[in-house]
Every structure is written in structure tokens, then in C-alpha cells.
Image (cartoon, rainbow, N blue to C red; front, side, top):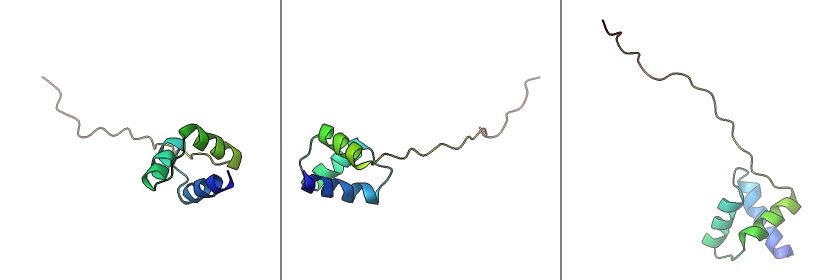
Amino acid sequence: MQEQKKKLSRFTMRTRRYGYRRITAELHNHGFSMNHKTVQQLMKELGQVCRVRIKKYRSYKGEVGKIAP
């Protein structure tokens, strides 16, 4: 369990915007087999959360067309 926490904390410290799905995929890409439920549980224990970036409001929709006569 300690080894899994070390692997997980290595990924979460580097990328704070990764959720459990992306971290699970990265672990699989690097050859570590870990269930997504285990990743969620370990993230909760370690206090790691995915920081969601707030989208900036943009009301501009391009050039306004001509008014019909």
C-alpha cells in the first residue's frame, strides 16, 4: 500500500489538474496496474483533489451582420 501511495503522489504532485481517470491512465501507460477505485481511495486519503479551472466568460461572437432592409 505504501508503494502505491508513493507512485500516486508522484503523479499528483506534478499535475494538480489530473483527476482519478487521467491518473489511472497515466499509471497504466507507465506499467503500473492499479484499479480506478483504488486510485480514488488513495487520492482521498492523501488529500489530493483535481483543481478545476474556471472558464472565463466571453460574450464576443464575431462580426455583426448587416440588418435586412
